[in-house]
Length: 354
Image (tube, rainbow, N blue to C red; front, top):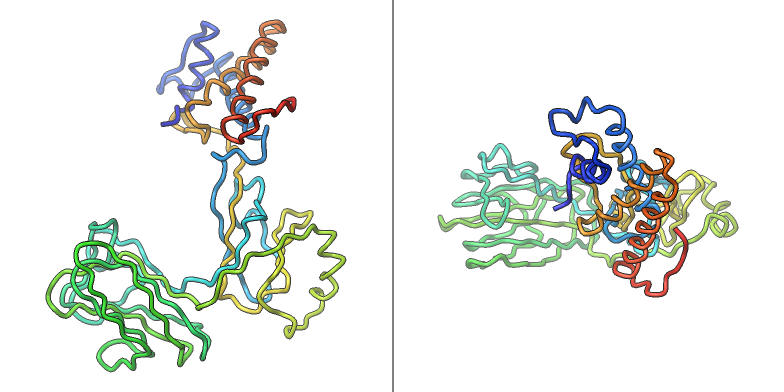
């Protein structure tokens, strides 16, 4: 478990025989204590910025694509986004289902699902799940495209469930597909497809035997293969596609094939999307957000915290005009960064200066 901000500060203060902070004195620090607070944050930033792609700064991101919209700002993805890995860009079909937060507090907490019959509830079994016993729950799905094929993935367990998909919910439902799922005690993954006969459909689960059945996860998306997007520099985009994209010709809108980045930290898609039923998924790397409270923790793995400590000691020695001691701490920091590159980035011969 990563050390707290308070611990990181006190590790530096201890090396200088300074009075350490406590949770009660943290907010009223002064003098060298406050200075070391700043140096710890600066040192974490230095370490993270020494490479673009430290594995511990990697995160998964996604953007819901909007028809007719080609540009998506970094800030709309994550306030801490530093760098996007454009080699991981995929355009995937959007999941229409709201799985909700199945808090164990009754049916009112089952976001997205409507009771058709019985008393659907929430359960903590297999994580947070929808519990059906002699009950039916349904969810309305809108904005489907008539004639298109859709796939439904389910993770369920317990008693036999009937999955119903059609244009209405309840007993009068006209089913597009019916699938009986026999689960037993393990969580099973089941897939079925159907063709939309209307823009609005209902997905329902029915348990009729009086035994407990659990719905862990449901996904409904268009039955298309995820599309890997090719990266273009902004100059390449301008030369090849910008003129086409600046014309308001919706006939040229389509599933994007390329992704590019602008000078304003925006992700661009071309062709301009013709549907909102897509999600852009990718990996990105986060920047450091300054620690502020005593209990805050950084994203630096615990085993590399001595590298942060060495950098903070360097700044503190320089603050005290002890250049010789500062150089020793700087060497300790640089050696630590090299070890991190070898271990985390497999750069055994990496000799770039920090």
